[in-house]
Image 1 (cartoon, rainbow, N blue to C red):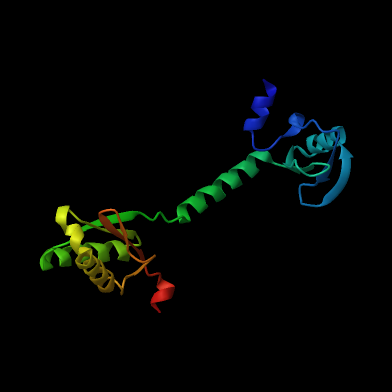
Image 2 (cartoon, rainbow, N blue to C red):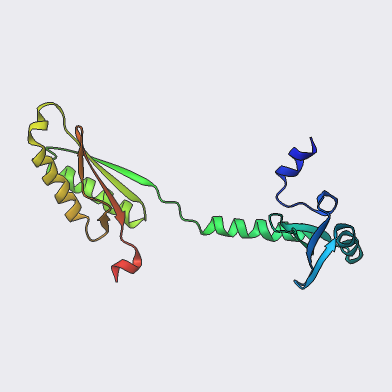
Length: 180
């Protein structure tokens, strides 16, 4: 039962540490050396701090005397900052047809450009129905034209591909460094 509790905790602290001796690091980062676990726990109690195992895979394991609550708070704060800076990229889909009208083409093109400028990737799909499969080159021309029209705001990840009854093209936004 105790093993499952220990495995859920990220770091072993104080009495949870069971190894006979550890390499001890002081509260200011100074190396104290290899000491018995009882001595390390006594030092941490004297300083009013926690003994935290920070490198259990080392031989002997590395422990540090620190304020564990403050350490966890700082760690959580760093994780929140990293999550805040992370940018989520969505993939938006534009569907075209083999015989699309000019106005519809321009409307879909406007949507794709807006998606690319806002930093999202765009998946352009052209579906063939029935006998249109006999004229896949016309559909390829529509896709190529769409790619050319989007060239100032996005680039193709890879060449458009005919798979089954659909031609698929992935466009990625041009980053600020590539625009210059």
